[in-house]
Length: 639
Image (cartoon, rainbow, N blue to C red; front, side):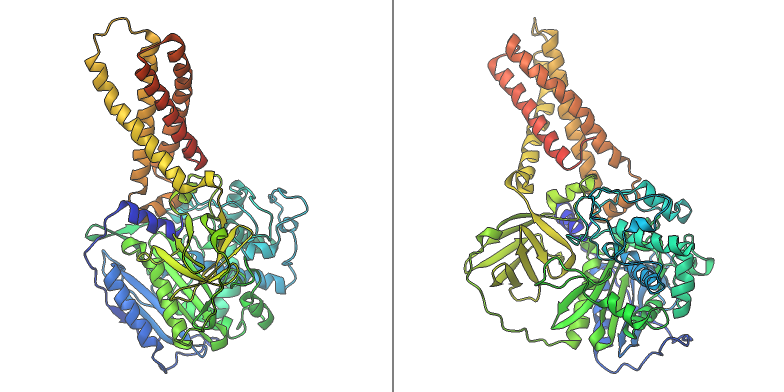
């Protein structure tokens, strides 16, 4: 589930928590540095102090237990520091050189490095069909003549459907072999490859499996030998379970729950190339970032490192695009390559400024209030970029071209077409409305939990800049692209797929059915002595009550599932909640009873059951159930 959806659910379902949790910083003395890594430089500027103050404030304001940071300038670490606690229950302080944090999707950078190593050695061809290398299973030929290439996997353009339910595990012992899992859980291909960048975990996991296949070595073992050891990253591991020395110093993930921190699990999983189970320290991550700034260091040639950082694809040529798994950003006039990663209780962000020989990595071991930890990392990246850029924004000339063609509702291309996570589109769509003077207002396009609307000024037809900000959006062929979200785009929806329309339909039909469920038993008691009621009419009323009760119960189960967005993220990834099965099961049974209601509604009019008002009510109830289930089915909520 995306971070924006968690924030939307939080605002819809939960009150804000008010207690603050204070956490201090715990820097450590410099450790022995591998020969291949440049020693930490003196703090030669105000950047370390600015980042240090920002992270301290974030932990205090947002109830995040701990964090770890590394900042590089001139290719050398100028700040390597831990903050707060690694385990809220034990009170263990964070050590930036020993405390392991789960990498989440930041691990994809390691996978890209491994793939580029095999490209250098001639074992992989970026332009080749991935099926050339697969033997145990094949990618389905959904689009004949349009094979998925290795390059597509690294640019999120393979076109696989998004699938996350059950992708994580609570224990490393439950992890299955990578190839076996990929073969068993291959998602549908929902668009031709190379057409649209849409964030894709399966594709990156498959890229890691290609490395495993062509080398004949398990992915975690290969990384350890060919990437981690050469860089001196002794506290980083993709193995599951971890070595005892690493496991002993792992941070625990947390989420706020009332006045305390609740430990999170679910950080393990089959797809280690995407970040499941992978751990690192801030100091170790500084070694990888330093190597990339240094032209690849001991792990890549300068050409391969350059290709990894170079633009390889873009959803719109007027906006930043993607390198290999890294995303371009332009902030304060600086071109950055960034990556973020989220797992239950862990959130990390990294950024490289190749032209400035600088980089930053920050990771948190708590979701924070309102799930704000993901945005907190972006704040650090923005502060990092501002240090090197110009505070004065470039003057822009506004275009007066008509903007009404861009109005409407848009849905993320990352929306699943097959899982109940598709419901994210119901509450996570983007609404675009036209304003005065060729301006636009968007709702639902902000990662900042404090900002619901953003306002945009048109620069040229279809290209807009945020008013008072630096972000840009672009429209082309019914698609909305965002400069700060280059690994996804948004597709315009026809009116009948409008989430706002669907919300009204669901709420209206649910309210009607819920009132009916409450009223029917009362009416039955009042009229219990009414003579001559046909058996068919009594059965019809029972079917109505059953359908309404099932739909109401399914809604309650869904609300319980979504009550805590941070907990929901863990539940979806682990897939172990009975509520995940209860929702489609209840609606599936309701579909059967509603089908019987359709027959009864016809018979009610034909055989004149009840008065006209009673027949009208029954018909309306049947229509309400059909509307609810029809909309629910479109979001994969019906079993």
